[in-house]
Image (tube, rainbow, N blue to C red; front, side):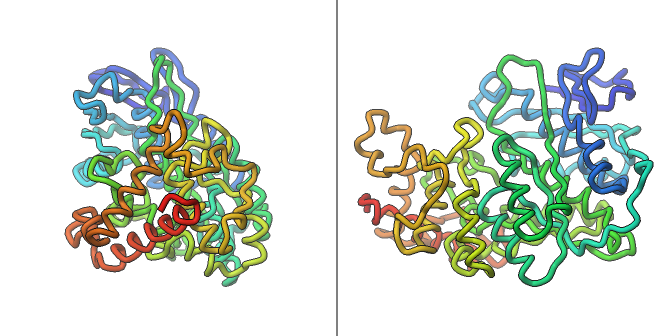
Length: 434
């Protein structure tokens, strides 16, 4: 499938494509969709400055990948029901430089989405002019992603406790905006938050819903913000904090039948390292930092710098992998199980988890009693992983998912994967399943 994601003014003559999608603006002419339609306006309005050309190019790549992913349904084009072959053309301001990095980016995207990507870069990309009324100062010292989830909430609280002055960046998602704004306000940053959304739209009847690359948008928004800060423009490197517990980041398959690409890999250490190499090759002085890469979610809660603030706000955070469809925690997906285990670690009791609204499926024993038991597949797979760890070892369960060839210094990552599974085991024991 050949997709071109271009500004409307860029001609597609001579480019073999099956679909054209408009970049950063509503669709015109033969375009079958659009992506990032409000990103330019909201970025300039909120930041009061325009980011660097390479930051806009990086955002264009992220938008293009997300748009192509959404447009091409895996079930209709892939022989195995998952792997697609996608030829993507993107407009950037420096096509030659991006072309020199093609192989590296294609490998990153293959790891992220499980697809085979072929990239082409054309000139005349977007670099918006500065806003008419530019701000005088942008004094923030770093950037931190703030999703409305529990991990990024802890990241915000911890940064605030050590007197950082972060610019918070949110990926605006239905149901999460109020949480994101409330969490920023709770740490005194209600006027230091950039809230954007990729807003990908396509007119195909059955768009892809797996959204493996969705967090690329989040990272690109963070890079946009970082390049507008005073310290960046003075030549310094800006830390971009990506708060995520190590257990979820590693995405160790619970069983041999669970494909790793069924879960997002955006904060996997291998992907983070590849992304850092890309930013460096682009000359973007942005350093990706995940301070919790060796911590479980429970450990993050226990060690949070402001326990009173965490206790007040944590129940309102969102962790569910299915929340976009039900607007609450399902209670049975892997992210929900990790969350519930973390609350148990933090409070010592199942009743200590006061998540609001309550979990849709609050009772894990339903894995054995629910008439549609297959809907509890993550509970079942956690039990299978725990059984393998108990009978053989954590190392046997982890297997080849964490090796020196995939992750530098793998032992701390193996340790956090094992501790994370133990937290889930403790929760399932309290629930009567172990």
